[in-house]
Picture 1: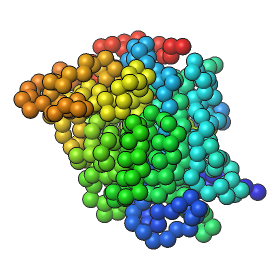
Picture 2 (picture 1 turned 135 degrees about the horizontal axis):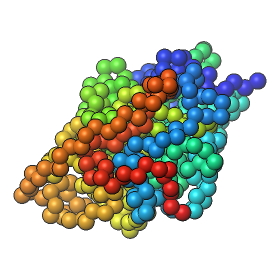
Picture 3 (picture 1 turned 135 degrees about the vertical axis):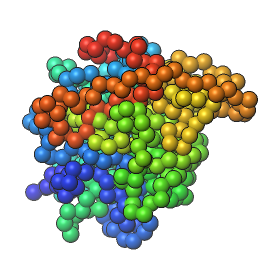
Picture 4 (picture 1 turned 90 degrees about the horizontal axis):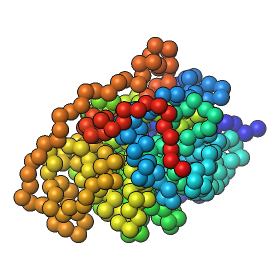
Length: 454
């Protein structure tokens, strides 16, 4: 009799941490040898902590519905954003743990068809014989729940006949799942090694590039600039694909990891993403460095949960959940400006980010807090202070124009959960960074149900 895939993660889930053990040693394995751990350097880290476990409200029968509008979508004024673009016709590869296609957010078709298509799995096919919902050759299984959560932030569809208000930032984009890891805990001597692995990660990025997607989301990071990973990223960038990757976090790194530049975020052509907390502040637990390009919400994120429905994820600011907000913004740009290409999409994201000084980036938040609507509506100007426009030199004679005053901190979306005991969900909706909300809070005053345009 096959065991459920969740058993693989039971030990970590009991501690309230589903995916943090990426610091364990083991040889970067090929798909054929993925179940044979042997000594090597540190593995990639899945940069999220504090996911829900099986004892929590999100696992209730029928699923837990988040019935209030996610604050991130309200802050980004999603309805106005979607009047311009909603990700139609754009394919986003999620190189992660696969997706659970039973989740209602992925079973609803939009005006451009299904929310997902056939991807791939680089895990051993033998998993299907032993574990339920751990392996599907198309990437349509997710033993950890991490990939499903990342995909939900990007492209969760509205669920009809449900009180759920969870919707992805690019709700009509199409997810292409590339499964490169599973649950990350070995619970017995006969457990299969499914930890994140540099070889599989590189192979997954290369597969996604060959699949012809426009955007690749990688919510993982590793200290070592492995040549296989560098080559895979260069291959994807050379095909005109925007790779969006985590800048990394001490919360999930190997013991002794010094922080600083991590990969693939540190490779040329990759947009490196860090996470901010519910007040728009960077976390001291996240890595800083020249590889950080932009910041996005990463704490208390409302997204799709396993094959059930919704959950609040990210007890601490996690780059894993910031990456998909940026990837979703890239999908919106790919729909609106299909001929501009990846370099210009990345430029729009960085240039439009909210920051105190227009001409100045820093190693903690890069060029500032993600501002999707401004990325869609800005005028590309080679003479504007900030990141250089592709093909143009940086502006040397810069002014240090300051941003508007910072808005008041947003309402804590966990307040009702605390009152009702739902805090057990361990996480919460990712609030928009305060700096990014300066312009958008004045736009999104209606708090009724979000309507995604057809």
